[in-house]
Length: 368
Image 1 (tube, rainbow, N blue to C red):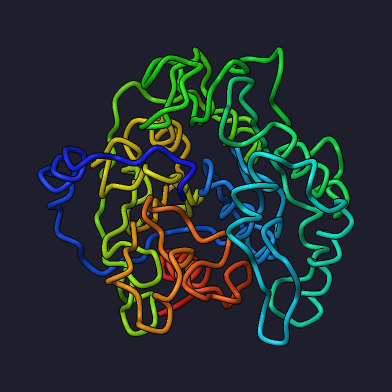
Image 2: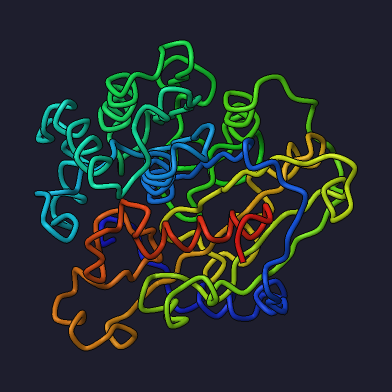
């Protein structure tokens, strides 16, 4: 989205030149995953998408980590016969920077009920069992803390008990963060609001997200024993039209050694979503290897799925969808405002949500 700082050509060249970008993308395999132990987390556009994925598939997702993301459906203008009408102007304005202009939280709870009544998302009663982590950096100049607070309020309105919601903001570890995924010692200065949107604040956000969702965990490893897997995302998109739908051809997976095929007992699965300007197209392997999730995953038998968004240009869109710049995705954001004319973007029928969920089903042996 235009509110994010754009990368220069040098970043694109670095991404192309990265040896990780050259990893062969094989079909996604199956691993011993417990389908009752699936969670999702994300930063910025990835946080909005994590929220959408959680509410759309609440029967299959046990918890969510939302870092700098606002309430479900906040970019929706109205419900239509075919889906929803959403506006990029609502996303950039009220959802992110002027949450005082958003409708009451009960309005978004009503949208959840309406979509569930149509069978487009799981029954909202499932959300009540979820464990949710939300984070707002005090120095974040991109997504207002009030927007994140409204996201927490919506979860409470949907019936999630207060003890199951962890909200981190002022006067707590990492509170001084800018717009970023927060780590103990990797990335920009803590209060930065700049690429790669990974800040070092002396705070282990990855660990707290996973512990909030899964409960007590073993300490993270110092040295990884697992492996990164590059996989083909095109098979999960109708007509293999990944780029036109804001998805890269290749996604990534972290597989702990103890979660390889033939493991004696099943592992958990964490879907972890990058934000705008954080895909492997721009950062190489930085997001999926340096934010601290893999170290916790390795010691706690958690497979980590890192789907990848794509920075879509007008030339990559079907002619009927290229009429407005609002349908492009120049910064590789996840679709939480309906770009590309996807009227079901926040439901189970949304192209990106369906693609990610199909990956989950493949990994856990539930789908083709």
